[in-house]
Every structure is written in structure tokens, then in C-alpha cells.
Amino acid sequence: MFQKKISIGLLLLILALSAGCSKAAGDLNLTIDGQHIVVTHQTYKDIEAKVNQDEEEDFDLPLDYLFYQNGVPVVDKITIVQGAESSSYDWAEIASHTFWRNTREIEINGVVYLVDNLLVECGGFDEENVHSITEIPLITARVLDIPFMEGAASSLLPLESTEHVVWFFLDGFGYQQFMTASEQGLIPHLFGLGDFNEAYTIYPPKTSTSTAALLSGLDSRQNGIWATGIRNLEVPSILDAANDAGAQVRIIEGSSTPFNYPGAEITLSGDRDGDGSTDDNVFTNAQTAIEEGIPDLLMVHFHGIDDVGHTYGPYSAEWESKVAEIDTMVGQLIDTLPEDTLMIIFPDHGMHAVLDEGDTSLGNHGNLVMDDMAIYIILVRK
Ligand SMILES: [Zn+2]
Ligand SMILES: [Zn+2]
Image 1: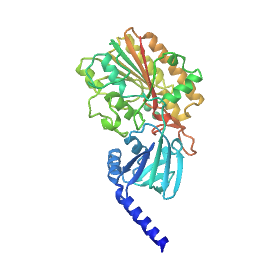
Image 2 (image 1 turned 60 degrees about the vertical axis):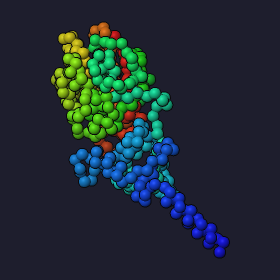
Image 3 (image 1 turned 90 degrees about the vertical axis):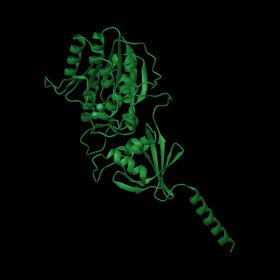
Image 4 (image 1 turned 30 degrees about the vertical axis):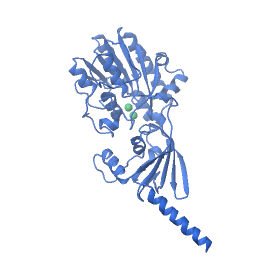
């Protein structure tokens, strides 16, 4: 009799507790570094609609989107809780095979789990003051006296005004790759530049989405370019602002442009000599652009490290020689730049090694992991 009373009391307590909690039966309990968030079906639908722009039926929505939406730059570990059971995963190992199927349904390596609680441990830089790729156009506009992003702040400012800005855009050569290359002595020119600032790119860390952030100074959540396949901004860009201010912008690209650059003079370098790389052609065209009279803003986009990383893997012998080659090219271009130039050296994203059998490439990027998200901004004045 006494035992029964306790059971009824316990049942009442459970009922009272569940009534007091705002989480409905179909919601997902998300905990990020100890902070609780209730994820409703509406949140799932909103994110899904923004990412799946073509409304494909069996669309794979990376779970990374849920974390980034909640302000996480890098995930270290996740734990899925189902009733009394829980399993933890190293995010770097599963991120590219983990999809969000419905509010509480998470697919990991082809298996769908109905999740009660999802616990997330963030990773990333230890430092508090980490910069963002979105600060690059802001800094550029300020030093060239172009009105853009007025009211926005960056702790990399103030910097003295300058005649020219050159962006060395090193595709796929992220923070982790830079550090490894410098330990191996592959990048004496880049490493010797100094004033190295830790930063994050935006999610998803892909060339087109990162370029949208680079041009707009806005995060992917704010500029509308939250998935690949979109080539135009619907928010103001530094290219528009430069045009309005009468400043000249020239962009030296490889074989194609990852994004539309309205208002800029674009040079598509291609692989003119058929040696399998556009970098030497980009280098020659950049040299010519500097000799002809450097514009206010010159962007030089080297694609080779990313291409070789996809094909042979980051840190492969082929990758190492490509990194050394681009380091030399950047060093030579810097030597030819006129005085009163601010150089900004940065990548659009990093890259992680792909180890799974059956994958056709040995390197990729696109996840909320340190290898892909961590970048740097190097500022050098000449
Ligand atoms: Zn890229
Ligand atoms: Zn790539």
C-alpha cells in the first residue's frame, strides 16, 4: 500500500515536470556546451526550406546547419541520447555522413536514430577574439576610404589609409594546412609576413558561399547565400560600393568564377599552357595587372592548393609541392607591388582528408570542423 502511494506520487511528479517544460513530444532537446535549446518542427522546416532551394524530395540536409544556426563555429563532439542510452561521436569522423531527416530524426552513416536529446561540445580556437572572413571587405573599404558597412566594427582596425589593396585568395589553404606547411618549411614567404590573425570562415565552408561573405561582409545567415548554387548577392557588396566611389576593382581568376562579380574587371586565366594548373597563368596575369598600373583593389585567386588537395589529399606529396609553388609566386608578386599597398592574405576555407574507401577524392571541405572552418587573415603593408 505504501509502495503504491510512492508510485502514484512519482507519476504525479513526472506529469507535473513534463507539463512545466515547454518541449512538446515532437521537439528535439538540443544542448550546446550546457545551454539548452528546444528545436521545434518549424525550425527544422525553416532551415530545410532555406537550404533545399530546389525543393528536391530526398534532399540531404547536413546536421551541421542546425549547429551553425545556433551560433556554433566548430563542433568537436556530439552525443545522441535515446531514452537511457547514449552514444558519442567525434564530429570530424561523422560530419560528412550525418544528415537531419526530421525534427528528431538524425541519420549517421546511413542509420536513422530517433533522438530525445542531442548534446554538442564546441571546438575551435582557444582564443576569445577570433576574426571572421566578413571583416576583410570592411577593412578594405576603410583603408581605401570607400563608404561600405558603415557602423560595422573590426578589432583589426584602425589601419592607415592606403592607395591600393591586394587580396591574395588562397583557395582551400586553411589555418590547419597553413600551420602544417609552415612546420614543414614549405611556405617561407607566407610565414615570414607576420601579423597573422586567427579567423573563421562561414558555413558551409565552400568557395561560392565564402566568396559571398567576402564580398558582402555578411555572414551566410545574413546575406542569403547559405547553400551552394547561388551566384548573385541580393545585399550590397564591396564591388558595388567601390563602383559608387569610383574605385577600380580587378579580379584575376583561374578557369572560372565561383561567384558573379558585377562591376569588377575580370580576367579568366585558364590553363593556357596546358600544364594541368591555372596558377602559373594567374601569376602571369597578376604580374601584368600590377605592371599595367595596379587598380585600387586587386584580387588574385589561386585555386591550385584546393584542386590538388581534392585529388591527392591535403598533406600529400603533390599538395606539398603545390603549396611551395604558390608560396614562391605570392612572394614574387609581393616584391613587385608598389609602396602604399595593403596586402590581405586569406583562404576561403580549409580542407579535411577523406579516408573512407570508395570516395573518389582524397580531400574535401564543407563541414563544421576545424580543418574546414579555421582560416587566417594576414595583413601586411608595403
Ligand atoms: Zn574554395
Ligand atoms: Zn574545394
